[in-house]
Image 1 (tube, rainbow, N blue to C red):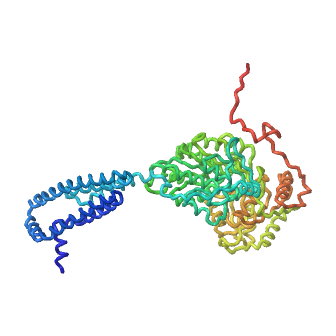
Image 2: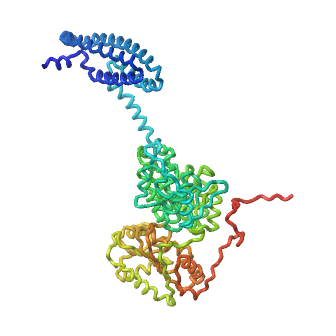
Image 3: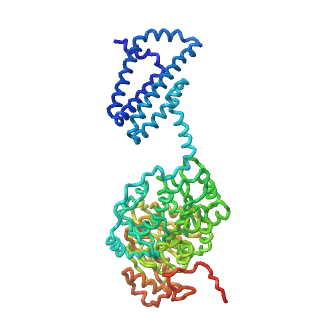
Length: 636
């Protein structure tokens, strides 16, 4: 009973038993392929070969004892040479058999060239392995050698692989919206789409399933039932590489509106080489807080795709940002840094120092464009854009809450036939989900008491941490000194309050904003630095302690509440002094368009100053292209 396993383990080829098993396994697979392709003739040949093999194995078992004795005698040093000779003879016989077998297989595969193509690579790879057998190289080593070389090549070129190569795309998107559905959606949300002449207007994306995007981007939509109006209408042209102008109220989801197309573009672009610090996507924002918020959002979106971003802004030391830019993509196999988000002044400063290379920027975003122009950044923006790719090589996305002349000029200069999407109207409109209350004061000294009364009415607790559950309250002041005074007064009343204004260091500002966001502090006094773009969760009410300098700033202030589909409330103190008197008519218009009234405003002039173009006056038209440069006039 024990003789059989001894005989099997004592065969002359015990050292190559693994090779034999691999060869036999491959031969069986090849026979199955040949039988499927060659029909009955090949099947007969395969059976004959198997029967011959069984007879040869039977003959070998009878001679096993003698073979073992010869093997023990041939353990001398020169025995290695005598042992190679039979192996060489065997290899010659094998080669002859292989040639015959190859001829038979070629004849069988001639009738099915497609199947033969599948078999030939397997045979070629095995031929190399058998050739290595004659040199006493194990099959396992010979098969692993080419794999090792491939692995080395993969490691060397890992950073050159497309960032989205391993990111599976979703199945084909669902059917787009029908013309009737699209028309109803546009009418419901008062959306106007201006498409360049001769081009087809694309239907809006009414459901996330209609988007053809990588599966890794799907988690970005968690918690949302459908795209916002600005997202639904800007995604179709943006994903096709078109320039887009988006005009919508604050809190409308504009970050995702330009973030999703940006990441989709990066996935299709080749990843940068190791050490390449060229920027592909540039996002320019008016304030540090908005730049940091956008950076955090894009970093979270790009993390599953291995795409990182760098934030650059003023108010903090420049050296850490310089190091981050210089170390971009230095670590092989790490996340590729392709996105830079920053404020105009710091971006231009780093570009002029040669630290930030914008020559490869093919996707440019100007976020809150009207705000940047209001702050006097137009020249900086133009200098920044001149360092990026030009013309059709760059896709430019511009988002704004209004469509003033300065933004129009910027769009006509740096965009190629943009698609303009307007949600609401070109004029700034208030968030319809915000309840607006305006209180007119005859005595400004009573504002502090009214503020404290409103805090009590809103059931705001003085010292209890909100922990992210209780609604926060944001108090806006006009001047930095005024914000400091109001903060100190609230602190004296026992409130846990933070401050956010220009007199504070950037570290103190970020700390106050973070504490307000995470609920550690439920009350924040700020200037208009916090009025634009900041996405602060769960702000239940906004109190305008002092009316802002423009009606646009008023709408941006109250837009900090009622975000993400929630409702909110704004309370505004209006005295009619100084600049406020001339804004009474515009404030009344905003209230009237939102369905609210304030009888106290009627004692002030209700005139509204018409905005006119500097050169064309009231005859300015925005439906014709504006000249982008000087025109040469030749007189005869």
